[in-house]
Image 1 (cartoon, helix red, strand yellow):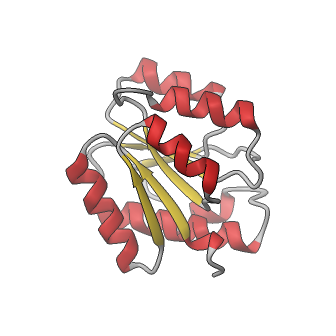
Image 2: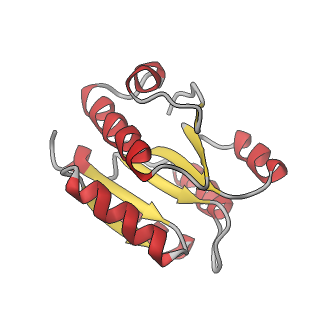
Length: 152
């Protein structure tokens, strides 16, 4: 994988979870940046190209919905594969449908399973313009992840 395709951004206000995700992904050979809130995430997205972004919905300062709104408004190219990680209730998750999101991961989740999904998405992102998530579903699968078949 090229350097850009190996870049992942983990955005979560839970420092323990964020650190655990980042360490697990680094062990899988990915370059990982971390952000504790949406404002930090947007600063990083403005200066780096990410293959995948793991994005919590409920955070202080700027929540995940605000990040999704601003990313959509700015029309990032190439846009990262966005996997929402959340413990939010069903109504909040339903609001995600209005945004360009490739998957939703419910907390709590198995850290190794999510790492497998992120690695698969980064590999697919490198091979194509991410025309479909069907291959990621076949590679990673799992009932914890609802992959949405959306085009970037």
